[in-house]
Image (cartoon, rainbow, N blue to C red; front, side):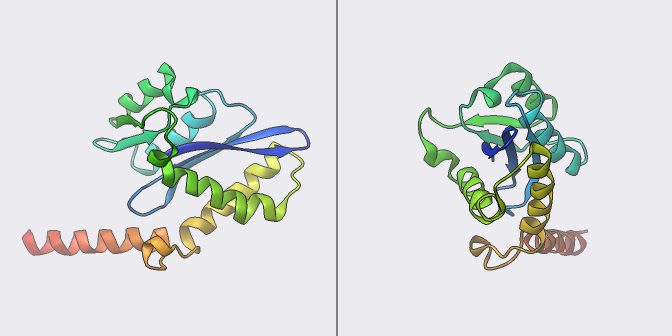
Length: 168
């Protein structure tokens, strides 16, 4: 699930893109930039998500809204190159991207409004790096039975390995 948000700084806007795994709620890709350009802001977040998956996103569904940076040819071509299946909701329906919107809202509530005002895009980028680590490794999520995204993934892979050893 993907979406973009923005943060006002004294030097202009910082635009923030997140790629979130729906199963574990782990932020698997993110980027902060001074531009919304598809080849810069969301593309680098997508490439980070792919890198964390070993360079490919085969068989995964990439869901985003109809924002121009997510429907641009350069971006949709990259999704296909990585092996993912593009998905967009209906125009003007924020409910179909609700999880991504919730991530943005929590980011702004838990970080941006708490630590601002922000001076530069770089300051937002560094704070976002720390926030993403906290989100994935320390923040307890009610949707995950008060576990972290990392704990959920570890439990999933431990179960998969157990299942494979039983059948293998």
